[in-house]
Image (tube, rainbow, N blue to C red):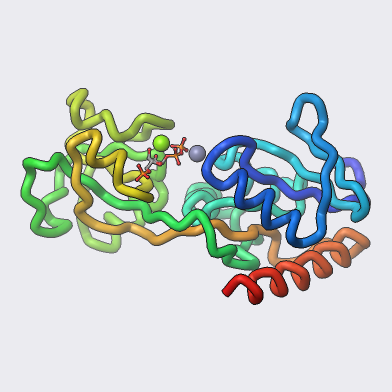
Length: 223
Ligand code: PRP
Ligand code: ZN
Ligand code: MG
């Protein structure tokens, strides 16, 4: 890895967290020049640059040292840590950011009754979060088949490829549209500032600390 003296923050390129994350950084006094391809934004003023990527890639980019910090859902961070224990060990949610609230839930077809985890025994559950679902199933002593899907999880029961799903619920509209209902909450989530537990021991660490102080000010004002 080439040495870097500028702090690099990863955030979602396009999605629910993009706008509030940009707004938050602006309120911390950071300004960026959008590059033409919009993957890399050069920071003006402070030595802080932005990398716009898929949210699922953010924890890995931090773990590998490509980025120093990232704005990402707690669910994505936890999933990375569960599925990559070695790489994920040094990562942490440094701050909760107060937006992007949602929950990872198990949902079943509307017409199915749900009377507890035991009912899921032997069922096929589709999810993009095999680590978090696996942990929940173990905690509840349930053996089920986890069907990994990268997207469109909500359609699996109708296609007959799964009996239930485990996916993010925010407004609940996706569940309703697919005739599913929430059965159990696996974890509550919101956007967090993710980073390595130990900040870099150079200028980047100092900039990160300055940014954390400003962030605390912004979060406090908002509360
Ligand atoms: C999530 C989730 C559902 C939807 C739920 O996807 O996978 O599809 O949001 O939200 P609702 O309860 O408000 O309908 P999202 O579009 O956030 O991201 P993804 O592309 O990573 O699935
Ligand atoms: Zn995603
Ligand atoms: Mg989705």
